[in-house]
Image (cartoon, rainbow, N blue to C red):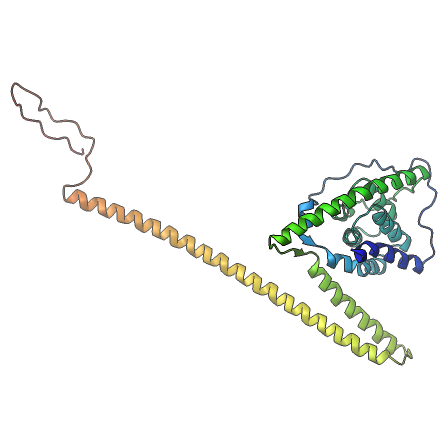
Amino acid sequence: MLFRSNTLSFLAALLVGAVAAPVSAQAPEGATTLSAAPTAVDEDTSEEAAAAEDDIMEVLDLPLVAVDLSETSGLEYKEMILALESAEEAGLPASEATEILEGEAEAVKSRGKKKGFGRWVARRIAAGERGKVIRRLAKMRAKGGEEAELTDEEKAKLKKAFKARKKAEKERSDRVKAKRKLLKAEGKRLKLRGLEKHRERQADMAAKRLERLKALKAKGAKHPELDAKIAKAEKQAKRTEKREERVEDKRKDAGADVREERKDLKDARKDAKDANKDAKDARKDARKELEANGRGPKGKGKKGPGGKGKGKGQKGPKGGDR
């Protein structure tokens, strides 16, 4: 899809327009190379998992995530540009770029800002990591220290690695599309990935926009459409708030249903246990009744002393329970 493939280029251009800063610089000798060993992360990055999900929400959220990351973390635009350009050159989907930026935003909250984000991402992408994995690895980056600058030699290696990966990503994308088409033909419903986060972002952005507009008015800003913009922002904020309330109600209802199902299962197990006990007691009562009527099961008693004599000797008494 053209929109999905051009999103990274558009966003990178947008960020470039914000600041005219160089993306890369000459590096000192002995900088980090592409051979850094990846850390094991438990993430399902299979083609089957990708085919079972629709990532359109994460594609739509990429600009929002980029803006949020720059505002809340203080990350330099050139770092984001390098990360986005690396993802694009390697042929990664825009949704995976969203994952990468989200991972850094989450990591900054726990460990603080760390320089060299763009260079670190470029190296991870060249090493073959997917967006989900890079997102998780971001939290594992040690606090302090700085990612080494890229040497000219390493830049050339990165470019070569990105070119090879772009070809592989195109082939993977074609296979995922084919698998997804098959799933749809089988009547299976695709999971809309990132839907809840998308709604949360919309609500958050609407609230921030309203806050900014009100702040402008409080400072005496003169704009012919300011009041109209505030009114529109208020409506949007209320709409997103109501939507969040409906989603939360659904979550609560779903939770209540799960709890009810668990209770029913617990009661069913108790009923089965009681029924089993009743059946055992009934078998005992039936055995006692048969024994009282002389029809109980034979015991393992010894045979009586009677034996065969001459002629038709009588049988000895039968053995009984002792």
